[in-house]
Amino acid sequence: MNDCAVERIIFSAEQINRRVAELAARLASDYPPGELATVAVLKGSFIFVADLARQLSAHDVHLAIDFLTLASYGRGSVSPGRVRIEEDSVLDVRDRDVLLVDDILDTGRTLRTAVDLLRGRGAKSVRTCVLLDKAARRQVDIQADYVGFPCPDVFVVGYGLDYAGRFRELPYVGAISVPGQ
Image (cartoon, rainbow, N blue to C red):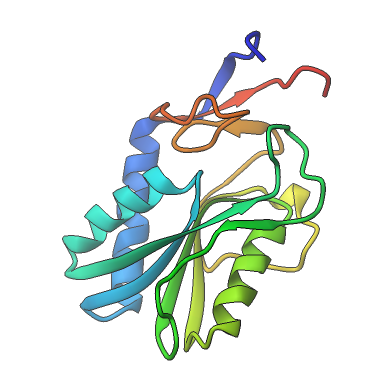
């Protein structure tokens, strides 16, 4: 694990900042001013949802944010195919429009699990916003409503995304080679 390094930058900090502002403007045109119930999937989305919240506040849309911790990768680089709820959201979503924020839409299992969970709790609507959409790896029929960037089929880190707990702090999204893959 110590021999992993970012090989190339996929999306620069400037590209990400610009795209988050564009997503916020689009969200603000789709949701009225006021409070929007938002559930962010941890751990990877924490930087994205914070930047999105700051951008949305400039449009008078304020996020009532709660978090849901779902695990599908553990410490590895390949999802075993099941999603576990490690920490549940306590935000009351019944009869509310909900924005679900995640870092990456990959196989689709995590996002599908979260959408189904929120709908099952009586959300009036659930729309999804992801920073990255890695469509090449999709195994579940789901599309995000708002997408920052289409992502190539490489292992990405940075801007909240990690490999075995490392690289989350990077201000950009970069590609790494994972040993043994």
